[in-house]
Length: 266
Image (tube, rainbow, N blue to C red):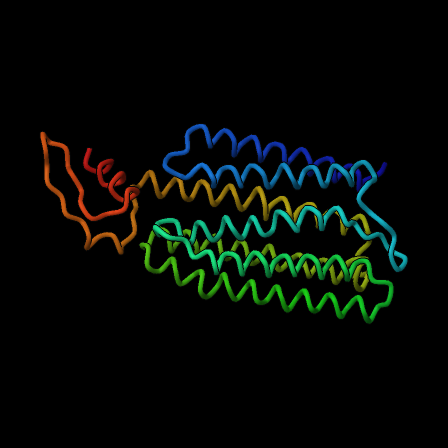
């Protein structure tokens, strides 16, 4: 039995289930913007298509005596920047204006991480392979710094609920993403401490939980915040209300905060 093909097909099925679940959630968004659901749905669809290619024995070439799965990189170069986009949107959930400079920097740096990894995988000489690998690791450290420092700092101005959600997502996100360069270096592309089947298994588990698992936690966390009527603490001093026919009217707040306050007053 071709276990690698079986693992890839199981991954494709898992991605399909994940996309269907996020689509179902989008039918009742509970105040979470539809673009959040659109990204969450697109990620597993794209990833599933890339892994379907590998299940069909496509998307791979031989380099330096080992198999380089370039279909993985076609998956990652699209989905990993989108995951960073989703994380950034969560970090700036209650901000009227998003910091697109920071978002663009994180997404662009992540593209560098993936491209250098692909070049490393395709390199014939061991020294050149590890040079490209460590260039990718350096770019990855920049991404980690960005999500742990400037991006995390933004959540501290938007209420304890959002801050706590981001911290949970951040730890989950970081642990899984560190797994990618770790598996690469111990696998056939690197030191060869594990065989190709184990490499395939790990590169099915990691992406499943870092894509479907992350989006599940992210969307349900945001929906929970909306259910609780949590708004940014920075909006609190701006509240000024009066009542017309028993309906509270809120002045000086963003539309999202007004909606949540009206909901809580019922």
